[in-house]
Length: 360
Image 1 (cartoon, rainbow, N blue to C red):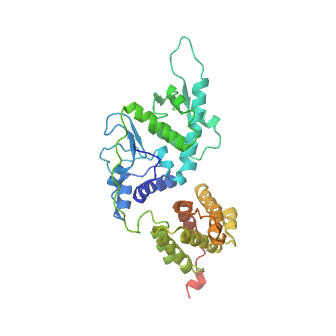
Image 2 (image 1 turned 90 degrees about the vertical axis):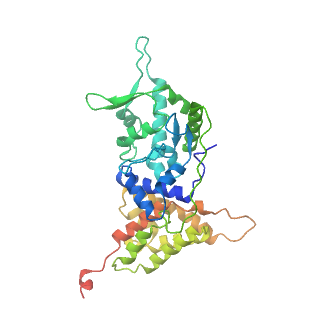
């Protein structure tokens, strides 16, 4: 049985990361040509990878199905914009605060609205909701989430049933359908994905289609390299008042050990990076970098995750030998997007060579 929650191959994850990072930066899914060209640089076939992702329900174009992307088997045009679903955010922690978790909050708000909607004895029209209803019930949703919500709802089986439209005043609306009741117990992302898989499989009347064979292992230099290789090269080439040779060496050794799946070396090297970079931001400690530097909303989340990671690194560096086994593995490292956001900050904000010194 195809399991949408099962671990993906590094190559499949690279595809999702390539699409997700552009969405987080630009607020829109990239055109397919961008994804294809980006993965081509690392000898990865985007078409093959997107077809290899797990999917439940009916095979082909006929009948209901659900997977990690909106792609359902047709040829993708260069200017198409395949999207990631809520199921994909289960595999990408960086998407969860901006798509997965806000969607779950929205879903349960809709469940409550449907349950409490007034019922008429003379009017069979289904109740409706608007974006204003969601905003009123859920203050503090991530910036831009409401604007993208109609497209998100359209891709999710929990909310794709029912008509939608726009009033004469330009207000978007969608019907509250009874299907929402089936998700009352789906209180986290994994439960939501399992519930959706079960319902779609039942609707299709057959077991999910078998997973396709994942591509063979690839060289280390992939878009999934823990620290972006282009970012390392940009750091190395930049003229700065502070020396970056150690930082560049640490980043490259981190990539090498990440590719070799050496969790202890990765933990120690990343901790060394965090302890090394504060002067680039005019700070003396990494806590100062997190608390005092004016990060944007998304990057603030990333660097906070790196600050939380220090506890895991302390475990690796300082826990003494004992009768208990170590439980540290590669999954204990923070997402690569966090590390790349930090080093992009270094690249942009590290002091340059003073003009008078550079002209001598």
